[in-house]
Image (cartoon, rainbow, N blue to C red):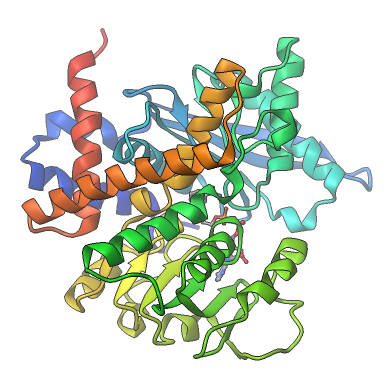
Length: 418
Ligand code: NAD
């Protein structure tokens, strides 16, 4: 069934707007409306009960104009080719905004991983790697974690690729466990980048995070770290939610107490009652917090609920959480949005650091990783802010313009083959 909001159409609509602001012609950027390469694979897996099931997987490489393709792998029942295409295109833009030498890619398998045993999950992952093997590699296309994929899964990817090659190739994937070449700071990097963007936004407005109220949707890798680090910076996290619902306390949630629960269970569903009230995801959007961090899935804020958003500032932890129609409503309501390709770029920045360490067989200290991440994010944020001011446009347009300049510039320098 076609999606109600096709994320690849959303991407193209935003791309056209930014290109127009920059005065680009279709010739300059039409190539960015198509992925360079898209691979669809069938993955037969022997389940624990002896049955053979076939899953569908994708790896899409959107652009390699600025370097090897880079992007995560998602395991979710709603994954389809258009979603993976959009996620790959956003990666091209994201790597360009933060000026790291990568193009964009993404992968996905249409599966609800909660229904698989660990053995089934491992067999599925290894079969997927075998099937996309011809197009990935440390100089070609480097996967990483995304929704429902973990460092452990990245370790299986590294192992499968290395076994085929006959020697260890840690640089084929990032987000690995530290023991097999992962980088210190990688697992917190996306959430840290979200926190840094919130802090830099407040600084631009002459404020700090101290006492600012925050609501976070999604308590996975991105949302849980962002919520905790925002709390550590002095913000008051009043609401959090995941797929099972949410919790709210106008005086701030006990983040230190909640942290071990998330580390162990990764879900709000089994949280015993405490000093908070239960809310649903719509309640979270309207809860009155000044900053909203959507950190679950795309299209969480659409035309139908954008008018209920009470926040003045949105930091997009997730990819594509706001549809173009919702974006217009939020802009009309005076909401400032730090867009996904900037706000959640911390993950790919530290993935880049991990890859650099792997290629050099060298290890960086965590403080150095975090410091380099902050410098990279600050540089990108300042550039986006300046471009948005110059063109009197939103930060989303500022980010896309900044990215487009780099990608189109690289394309022009390289020319069109043959
Ligand atoms: P994750 O699987 O670790 O967590 C996803 C969270 O979203 C879970 O808490 C889940 O319960 C919640 N969720 C799912 N559906 C929901 C719904 N309908 N309502 C409310 N909550 C819901 O995933 P993640 O890695 O944290 O990724 C989250 C988003 O951030 C995705 O859009 C992803 O593409 C993006 N992102 C992730 C990274 C990364 O490094 N992991 C980097 C950049 C962007």
